Image 1 (cartoon, rainbow, N blue to C red):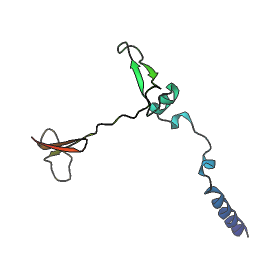
Image 2: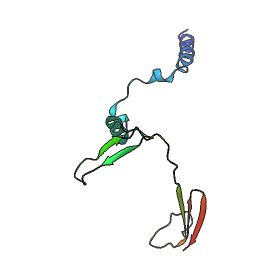
Image 3: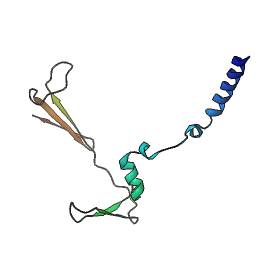
Image 4: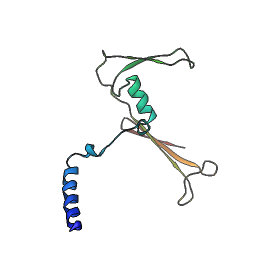
Length: 116
């Protein structure tokens, strides 16, 4: 009798739990938030926004000024690279013993290969 009552209770709670998983979160603590995210939240630094950055050297904290007048998205320039080296089987390359055979790079979809 107890087993059947528990089985009915479990199936009911599973159906309720699947509707909104946020109800299962009891608390979020500060250590759950990575440091760089916490700093961005505290300083109101948002991804996708333009800022003017001013600094008076390495001993002072830089000043960030939100540029709300700039709303156009920039056209990104993408750089990708790959370095082909000699290496032992199933090992990572070692700079002390392995040689570079080729360095390839691509800028905005334009493939370039530079033999070394």
